[in-house]
Amino acid sequence: MKQKSKPVLPDPLALGKAAEEAVEQAVEKAGEMASEMAAGVGEAWKVFSGLQIPVQSWAQLQADYVKQASALWNEAVTQKPAEAAPKLKDRRFADPSWTSNPASSFTAQLYLLNAQTLNRMAEQVQGDEKTRARIRFAVQQMIDAAAPSNFLALNPEAQQLALQTQGESIAKGMQLLLADIQRGHVSQTDERAFEVGKNVATTAGDVVFENEFFQLIEYKPLTKQVHERPFLMVPPCINKFYILDLQPENSLIRYAVEQGHRTFVVSWRNPDESCVHWTWDDYVEGAAIQAIQVVQEITGSEQINTLGFCVGGTILATALGVLAARGEQPAASVTLLTTLIDFASNGVLDLFVDEQSVKLRDMTLGPDAPKGPGLLKGQELATTFSFLRPNDLVWNYVVGNYLKGEAPPAFDLLYWNGDSTNMPGPMYCWYLRHTYLQNELKLPGRLTVCGEKLDLGKIQAPVYIYGSREDHIVPWDAAYRSTQVFKGEKRFVLGASGHIAGVINPPAKGKRSHWIGKTAALPADHNKWFEGAVEHPGSWWTDWSNWLGQHAGESKPAPKAPGNRKYKAIEPAPGRYVKQKA
Image (cartoon, rainbow, N blue to C red):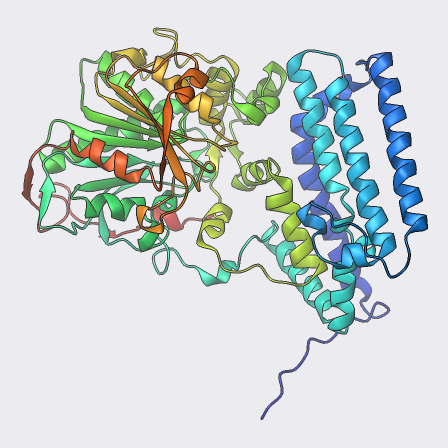
């Protein structure tokens, strides 16, 4: 029987120029990632020296630190060799190797004490709330990056693994590092395990329309009868649409088709250098409104049900507002999933937005930039979002991939997360200024979009608004504020978990829970709504499906072919656009 050969261990004296180049590339990449994050928090550090901590608070911090550090040291020096140190609650130090080694245990405990003290210092800084929030964020980034678990010399778990494998884990870690340098990002999953159209985005359908902005997919019915009103989904343009169609068992698209809805989905084009001039108006008129009109023409239905997810919901609401200004009400219903309409307070993302940062984007990417408009690269967006949860989405993989030599497992959600998309500078700059910075979308008549004065209150369709309780991209109170913008019938439902896991929660899994108000009342204060809400086990999908069915009309025989005489099938789903890489 042929034995499996072990990887050849690298000889430090023989790596020569190749090793030097690899290290240089690794350092350069780390520098790029640090620079990207520093752009968002740099202003906080500039003003840090001008901020003060009250003398009394500073004295208390010092006294507490000296007391706790002394106790930690005394405990370490009096601990008997056979005694195990107390188990640490932080999951980064959960492996027994951290407590069985006195030096490692002391290092981890001292790090946690330092982290606690730095966070307390950040809390005590005097200044305006946004600056204080930036300080807290920057301090937390520094704390997370400095964890001893991130360094081979301080990580006993990685060291033991290297000894047990006779260095094989280090060799594999080096190989994974070099591969990620070539990819340009830290791998979060085995990217070779998935292929769009083969084992993700597999729901059967056809592309029935395309222009330079998007492809429109019509999905093959799975029921003999369908509702008379078709259903259009507008996913976020900063991600690929197949978050709604990862696998058959967790596909919101397939679920809608199974409920008898004639389902259409916008698949955005991944912008390249030829698209740098695209504007917000282009996305609204050339994509969202165009998609609505094509669905109307194909199905012969004047009214359609609509859904927008995240930025897709913001684009959809804008499009319906433009159409309302033109005297058109094409939506029989609107579903908004983790969508921002009122941008008054948006959690950690607000830290990156002020007049200076928006002007910088205008001057580098915007329509009037000295060198012309540019692209916001998908990897920059992906890196920024990853560093909003660095321990889960960055350092966890640095340790696993490079220090332990453990290739990340195949996970469809993380594959999608790494399949990044670009954004045209003019569109992005408009969005940044008029929503996050100036919060004008909710104000009647303040914005002109596609030549029309925008008033979202003129949208007459009933609206189903969903927020995720632990969402760090669209905090649930921000999603809830949409209830105060729309004037017609509204329903708000709160789901458990985060921005993606809360949304992609199929009923068959029996996971998580959701909250529904006891009454239809939607007070301005989200906390008052929550006080009167009832928690229900399982997915919110069933509640939404029942609500959507009430607006879908009568049943009729399902179409035998996609499109119609004017709009013929162009290619099978998921189409070409979704396969374009950033």
